[in-house]
Image (cartoon, rainbow, N blue to C red; front, side, top):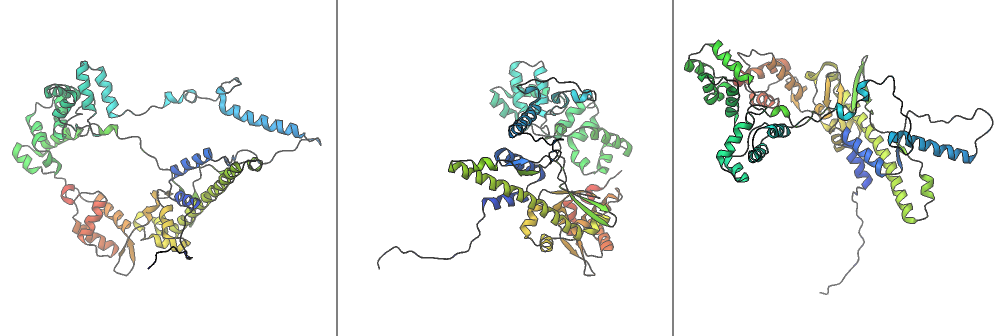
Length: 476
């Protein structure tokens, strides 16, 4: 059989995602901050995009008399206005200096430079390094101290052994121990401890509380008993009354087992809602939050693109212009889809918006997708990293999608409603006689008329980060 080459024609159908379609899909799942960064980047890279200024008048006034300005005058005035705007933007850094007159209404705080009004929160490492440089340790000991500080966790505990630090600094472990004891007395006291026992012992030693043998033994040997609230064996062992043991507990609870936690891992992140839902009479009004998002429009570069003689320049201009138009349309489509999804969520979850979390209904992505006529993946993307401000607080859009529990009468209830009611029951329980999972299941059955197994109650309780009844029990 001879081997030969042949050509065949075949008709195929396949889905091809263009770069523009990929960009539109990516815009759907961007958060508000990420969307703003993307738009700002496009404004910098695409000369056919510009931000619409809503504060400037869109119509120019005619001259008061019949005389019309010459074309040269118009060009000159246009160029002058552009230069004036540029000079206003540059301010004192412009090529033509201008006199800056102080404003009478300016407060001293407004005239203070930004650098003088804002400072970065110090980290644990920088705070300890500052104290190390001001200490009376010699240069060799400071090098050891830097190695110790560099091996601290975010909670302030030492994560390396003395031998490892001694090996890194080429010194004896005894020298590392000497420097470590000095650093452990830095602010916050107890930093660089190896465990919680050592941390608390350092703090009571600094407060001169270590002279009490009972307090010292409680910390050294019975921290687990205190955590589990097993107080009766401690009362018998140390022959204490409840009031006396309570005083020891107050002292221990005043100590800080994680001295480095106060420095944290950064500043808190504040959520800016993408949508606002207001109650107006018997209905709800949906308002998209466009505050801070640039309003885009095509720039006046069309004539410049037509004047390009080079074909490569024309191709570049056409590509950038198409990209600008597509971005504007994609942003509009994103906001339109977000509005439609939020409108459908309000329809499906109206009891929640009326009465609160305990009336949250079961909902899945397919319900919203079928309601507004889009694919489930589109609903999933548009609800990712998006937040809505409701009369009951700020929630992520994913919060409204939850599984269902079948009630005895055939109806359904959302799992988030069950969790909210479970949290309410536990918050109102007697701390000396906390509710067991079986009892919580009975109470949920009485309220919702649904059979909930004990393991389901335990699963919801764990999801809410609530300990078991034995750990919630208070013995005093």
